[in-house]
Length: 257
Image (cartoon, rainbow, N blue to C red; front, side, top):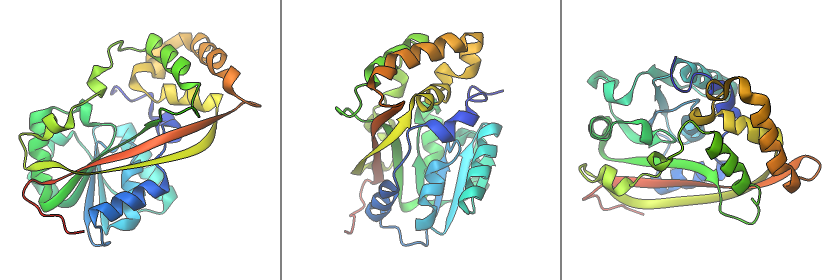
């Protein structure tokens, strides 16, 4: 069983979502025409592959976790999206995997071995292609006063007290490659969520997964509820999320806008 085995049922449903406008804006910045092939590396339940599918011809998702591959297959079927799926670590992808116009990577880069993974990504992406590093997180906003106490509890219960691995320097990661940061896209969106949604989001993380919390779940959930309940109205919280993409292109490519 992998590190995310017990998070699968929570991941697709409760993680911070990517707004529809995010995919449209990133697709426009990438200059997608609907004829491209896209690969989602470390796809999890494939929110990126599914979100970008309307803007490309073919999508492939890669993930080492069998549970995530099953969740991606189910999500794609529900969305009416054709999605090729490969269970593997990116570092182990063979040359027969082929090449793609765009590679997208979401909440996965920090789990990869920088050197070996970067060499494979370079091989996967066609000349003049692009890599988009994407994420969605709780925005630093007055709309989210519950976020600080929620995060304090999550970190206190976390399997990893030091979260520096999740704060990556992408310029350094890509420095040995043919890619450089060429563009950035940010889209904010507000929506409502419940306290149960935030509990589910905590369980979607490998650091506070059901396997990590174990038989302490009642106490964990009670702490989260007590911390965020003062900010809810009739059990409903407001949330502003920030979806972002950092687009890397060939260092000598002149982007045509």
